[in-house]
Amino acid sequence: MKKILIVDDEQDIVESLKFVLETADYTCYCAYNGEDGLKLAKELMPDLIILDVMMPKINGYKISRLLKYDKKYQNIPILMITARSQEEDKIIGEETGADEYITKPFELDTVVEKVNQYLKQE
Image 1 (tube, rainbow, N blue to C red):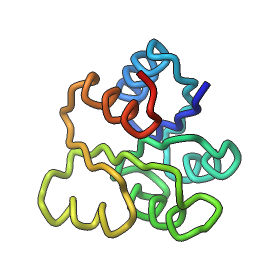
Image 2 (cartoon, one colour):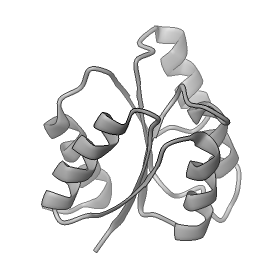
Image 3 (cartoon, helix red, strand yellow):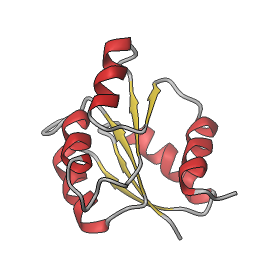
Image 4 (tube, helix red, strand yellow):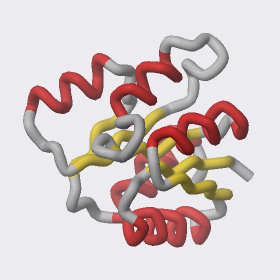
C-alpha cells in the first residue's frame, strides 16, 4: 500500500483527507505542525505528501524546499493545500518544489484524483 503523509494544522481537514484516502486504499500518516511533518517525512519516506502552507513551527514552503533540495526526498510528490490563493503564492509554491497547488476550500474528490495521478492507482 502506498503511504501518504498529511501535514495540516486543521484537524478536520486532516481527518477528512485521511478518511477519503484510506477509503481509496492508501495508508495515511498525519502531522499537525510543520516540525512534526518534516520529521515524519524523513522517517517514513512517504510516496506522496499533502502539505498545508500556513502552519505552526515550520511553514509548508520551507518543508517543501527542504525536502525537494535533498536528493533523498526530491522525488516525493508534494501537493500543497492552502487558503492562500494569490498568484504570487502559487509561484512561491512552485519555486519551493510543490508539484501541485490546491486552494481551500477544495473538493475531496479533486485531491483523491490528484493523488491517484501521482501514484498511478486506479
